[in-house]
Image (cartoon, rainbow, N blue to C red):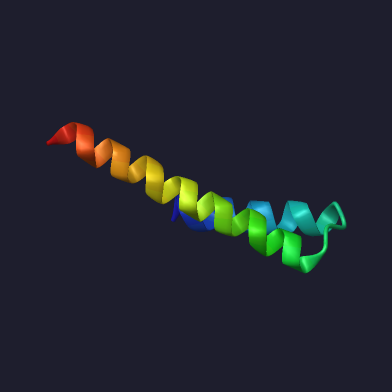
Length: 47
């Protein structure tokens, strides 16, 4: 739920700033990659 909210805020904010659509997609993709990387690091420390 929180992830969907973050994505919506990123998309709306970048649209309001007038960024091109391809740049918005790149930023959202990078956020997803970073989130997966951080989750993997957290899971690795738990075991």
